[in-house]
Length: 144
Image 1 (tube, rainbow, N blue to C red):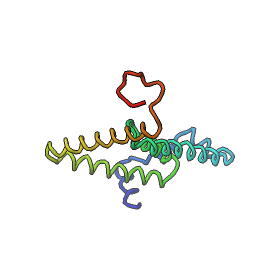
Image 2: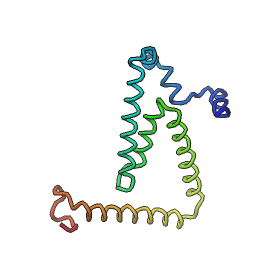
Image 3: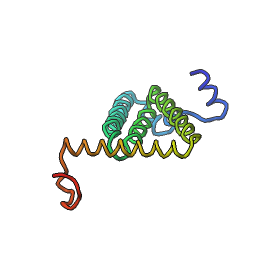
Image 4: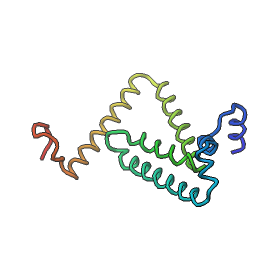
């Protein structure tokens, strides 16, 4: 934690939470206890809901992980633990993409094929369990 503060102090970059706290509108809210606590609860509820929706949609086609990270950004604007979790996530995503970029083309294609197969499998299982939505045209080759 101390090394992180020193790193921010050296380059003048502040955390998201610190930048939000330094803004004029946030200082006005923080000056009034009757507004500060409900604001923090609201940020926690909204951020938690966005993270929850993201977690539910991770296996489905779409921006599941992106939604989780967006929810963490909302939470990190007020909570230090969320900021640390967001930094942890950023480090691991960077290390994964760096590792994948160093691999041979066939490894990257295999990872892409396995990812696509997983998404298709989850979609098929979801459609099997929940049924095909009524808005899907009849000519789409899915079972009814």
